[in-house]
Amino acid sequence: MPVRIPDDSDFSSFKDQCLSTDGWNSRYNKSGVTVWCREEDSSSVQKIKMRIMCKDVTAEMLYDVLHDTSYRKKWDTNMIDTYDIGRLTVNADVGYYSWKCPTPLKDRDFVTMRSWLPLGNDYMIINYSVKHPQHPPKKDYVRAVSLLTGYLIQSNSSTSSTLYYLTQVDPRGSLPKWVVNRVSQFVAPKAMRKIYKASLKYPEWKRKHNPTLKPWMYPEQNTLPSVSLADLTLQRADSLENIDESGVREEKAQHSDDEET
Image 1 (spheres, one colour):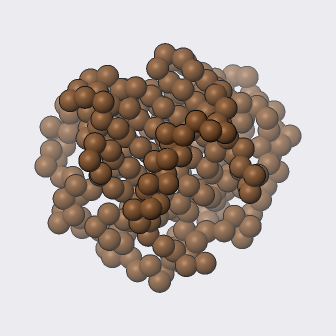
Image 2 (cartoon, one colour; image 1 turned 60 degrees about the vertical axis):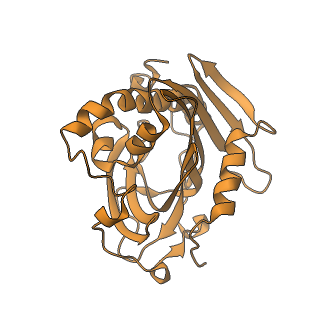
């Protein structure tokens, strides 16, 4: 299937989903972080949505943190690797991301098309999985599929903001119940708090690391090679390996994700 760059209606729909309460079930609500889940009638893959209130962090700062690949390597401890593949337009690119799954599950990776839009007091970043001919599935990873993943950042004041994270990912495998529960109760809240804490430290870090380099804000700074839409196709889940990990037992010693919840 052909790939389409999101337009204003896609961003508007994404924002509506982030702000809507209809059909969403609260799974976690503690210390300023809320996690909701929603079953989709047309898909066996549920959506997860999170929200965190960020005091002393502006919306623009959060936006910079989520874009800055160099800084992400400092705070995203679930990440194994990430890199940009190429640019499509001034506000769309293609990238690679791999992340550690809870032991003993296999690690996952993605190739996604990402698009972003600052709109008034709102900032949005959304992505979905694509196939790139030079970045096929890797031997040691399960290639997962992002059906829709993204962030909505809303400014509350000159010194505070609210971050929403919404994701619908097909992990390409039958996961055990403990993984699903652990994601909503431990992994997701901890990830949101990590972003918040990373944002508080970002200004100091950025002052020492190319402080004027922000290609997501200034497209003329973007040095990525161009990628043609014609080279990309939509990543369909049914074309990838589907593994059964439903019988995998949780290793009780692996509870680093439970901290700070």
